[in-house]
Image (cartoon, rainbow, N blue to C red; front, side):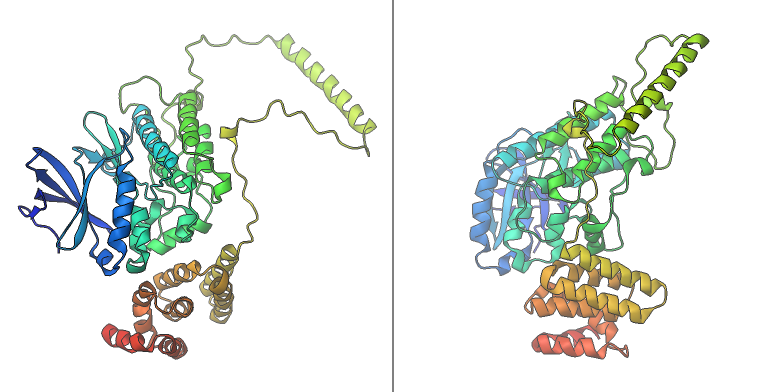
Amino acid sequence: MPFAAGETVGAYRIIEQLGQGGMATVYKAYHPALDRYVALKVLHPAFREDASFLMRFQREAKVIAKLEHPHIVPIYDYAEHTGQPYLVMKFIEGETLKARLARGPLAPDEALHILRAVGAALSHAHRQGILHRDIKPSNILLTPSGEVYLADFGLARIAELGATTLSADMLLGTPHYISPEQGQGRRDLDAGTDIYSLGVVLYEIVVGRVPFTADTPFSTVHDHIFKPLPLPRSLNPRVPEAVERVLLRALAKERADRYADVDSPVTAFVKSVRGSGAAASTPAGTVTLKGKPGTPPAHPPAVAAGAATGKPAARKTPWWVWLLAAAGLCLCLGVAALLVSSNKGGDATPAATDGAVAPEEVIPKPSEDTSPAREAAKYFEDGLRLLDAGDRAGAAAAFDQSRAIAADKAPFYLRLAAEKLEGRQEWVQALLFYVQALRNDPQNKDVRLQMQQAMYRSSGSADGGGPLQEVVKIAPEWAVGALQRAA
């Protein structure tokens, strides 16, 4: 049951509810003994279903409480009330970055200030071996005095420990900011997952929107894993080229193509913004990186690229200089042609690399990924195209191939595909993917709940009988009751 205003919870008196998410509800409370306000975060009741969860939660809370950093919201206490575990944290007066972005674009200096603070917090945690796993604007808190705090540190890790009792949506948090590897349910996560999520936040600040938005949470996760990143400059021409390069590297699909640590993208982003001239010393809000998609730059391209140096305009070059230059160019081309001709058929000599691009300027090139997940996705997308073309038999064959590949080698993709098909109201095909997911894990409560609507919708279809019979075979004690409830 949620706490009520005026209720006493341990040593704290509830003042009001501040917010609610898939994992927890946050309250403002008063601590009379110390005469201060605190924030109480009460975790989802589903955690209580796991008998061993409280022990794991306590252990993790102790680890997170050791993160003492000026930009991390500190944890004061851990306790239980009527069987509900909760954390007591510092109460931050202010607003979230999400609310701040809703009011308008950030000035470059404001964006850099927030990035440095969040980057420093993440870097400190990573050195302690702790990942955040849920970086998003609503977890970045801003105070009126300019302080920046990163909240909910480690709660995604705590939730992961209780994965058997939570739905996928709760585990993922907000799919718009999730890394590809986290979306695949991989356990071997490292700092790269936080780097990617921070990159999404930067993308939103700079471009004016998140890179991927789909009809369903699982479709959004699917896009993070498989869909090419929309180029920032194609959506907002005001984005400097150097800034785009940083975003492309931070948001690379493969972990190996991203920055090695969180300090690197922070340094590269600051350098790219300063180098572009976007963060000139001007009144707050008069120069922004974020603009309306599709609008032309407010200044000529030369100014946006940092060419406004205050130097006098260059003098007009005399005509005879151009004539000499043209003659010299012709001479160079002739010599080059002779050299090429004399070396034809010989071994080429590698060019010198003295002018190599600095590491932060490197853009990872798309690789030919032949992983099972991408192969399953390829057949699935082929099936969608065939559906659009009216070839339902061909689409069914393509979906069969996709399921066969995902079943053994990329099981996480089964649920992604099923939800995408639900969005198209292709209930029988969605149910077939759910059936395979249930076959892989017959006791998975999340799969059973998700497939309930597909079962009901498929029951009246001529070709829905086969999948329904399979469900009854796999989970007879549940399937019949699910259909009755749906009816």
